[in-house]
Image (cartoon, rainbow, N blue to C red):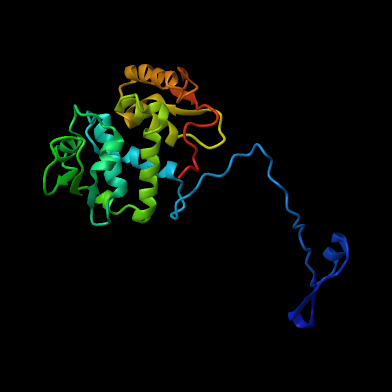
Length: 254
């Protein structure tokens, strides 16, 4: 393109790139031909309006909860805390309906909401549920969670994704510990990557499992066909795993 009339107009000129480079007030028009992506390139994971993928948002919240909750917090307690944190309002109000709690399949032998209240993380309001199968209304006492971004709708999308991962067909017969570990692994998996790796101690901290417990629970996920395989690399201390293809739950299934 050539610049004319003091820069008020641009004119298309059929000249080569070398001539355009030697001509003052001229610019090369780049090739705009569209290229089809290779068929084997996986689709980009969906992002929330805040710019983060739901996987990253869940991963960051799991990491935060691992730091603030008691180390003895059960998998059911951590899964409930995750839903409370991602579904809370900016003022910290949270309402988890009965249907959602039942969909989490937390089991009837633990009372995770009482554990969160005892830890000073959640203040229950109104009628106190006497079973983890009941819904709850409360207020978060953690100011950091109350100031998280982006908006509530974006966080609710991440909460919904986490709920669907834990409710995957392969995981339904399993307990809360394998399902929490499956969520941690899926949240650390990158679309299109054949293998992923996380430090064993970090993996145990995020899932609430001691290092000696990890092999047994990982084997359960392999038997359930949620994982294709896993290995422990003694030199690096990493746990490396592979998800089946296609994944148990696609990253863009929102």
